[in-house]
Image (cartoon, rainbow, N blue to C red):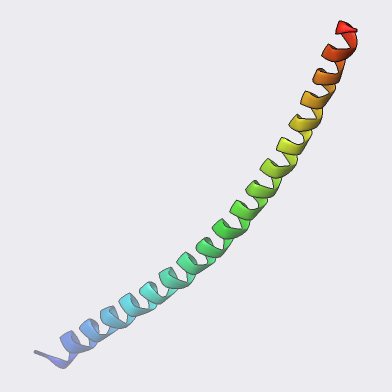
Length: 68
């Protein structure tokens, strides 16, 4: 194998390793962002359920007031 071919192969391997490392870092960032978004989603869901409960309480008190 000529030196030129070996150098080209070495460069391609180096580029591939660098690309893999970048993809690993990007995947980790995406996992962290996904976890943050899931927490945010859970918080919104909790707050929305609280609001829905208050509306249900209001409807319940309206229904019992109309029965009286």
